Amino acid sequence: MDLVFRAAAIFCVLFLVTRLIGRRELSSLEPFDIILLVVIGDLVQQGVTQSDYSVTGAMTVIATFAALTVFVSWISFRYRRLRLALDGQPIVLVMDGKVLEGNLRRERMTVEELEMEARLQQAESLDDVKLAVLETGGNVSIIPKG
Image 1 (cartoon, helix red, strand yellow):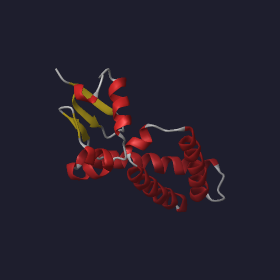
Image 2 (image 1 turned 45 degrees about the vertical axis):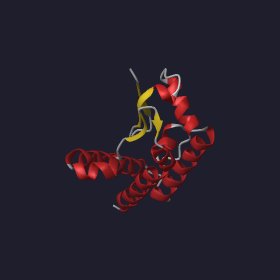
Image 3 (image 1 turned 120 degrees about the horizontal axis):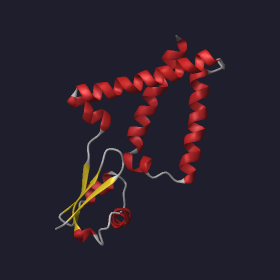
Image 4 (image 1 turned 90 degrees about the vertical axis):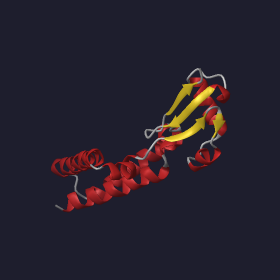
């Protein structure tokens, strides 16, 4: 039972950390970020399982993480007010060709990164963008003018 409590505590910490890091950072991982995630994974494993290297212990931790993931998803689906806290909400970055600087700053995103996203979605410049939205998954959706 100790494994379940430790796994639940680590799950909560990881959930909060991923929310604090920001969706943009998680959607565009650099090589160092990937290495850091692997190291974090190893540290989490050590913290959760301590000296328990049994298959039963590993399955218990995996089942606990899976159950908590499903539970958070169900809570988000069931309760709209909690959905905003758990999943976040889309953020408008460009409206009618005008960059919303405050929203960019809040998401720690540069105009250059936004311009790159626009080009990837076939918009020549931000002036050609009717609406650009940073979605909850970290992707930028571009709706062109016209």
